[in-house]
Image 1: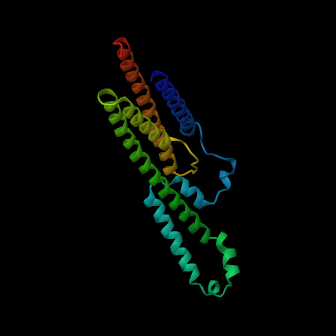
Image 2 (image 1 turned 180 degrees about the horizontal axis):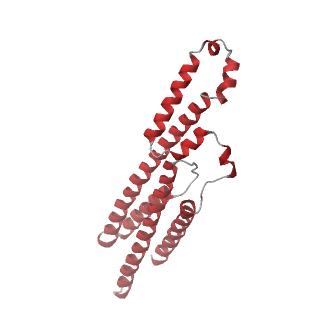
Image 3 (image 1 turned 90 degrees about the vertical axis):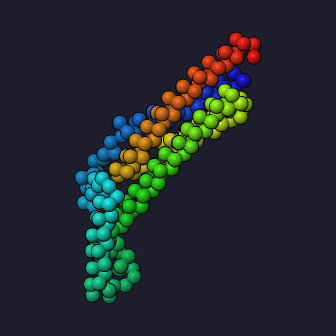
Length: 206
């Protein structure tokens, strides 16, 4: 039993610590700056600077209105399909496309933050339940609950493959770091608690 618990603790500790280090680098050292930033289109700079989804939606509304106005122009209406496609990289079509993509990415990051918080708290409930089961009911069921709890926490706080440069992307990384750090603290506390219980059991001839 003790050997199994030690192995599980070590695996969990290594995984969570690795997550924390990678996320800490992204939060504190990764600037996302490039020498090419000065050559960005104005709309791309605006996307990086907006603080809320409503601001992004307002910019998209302006770009979308400009596109509709352009499409009503007689000169545009007589263009062939190929000629219209060629103009997609020109204004105002480019701004509309960039802003639409930015909104979709923002909403995607918002859903990820919501899932992160939900499943982490599910893991916390499982952790508490596992501690209760381990202490007063059945050790093996308790261990199973603890494994499930920390698996949920580690999975959802993992850096994974997430990219972006918006404010919402930064919030996602910061949330992952905060919850990953909390997971590490909980793992250490649980490890100390379980060690104390097993030591008492050993002293009692269990």
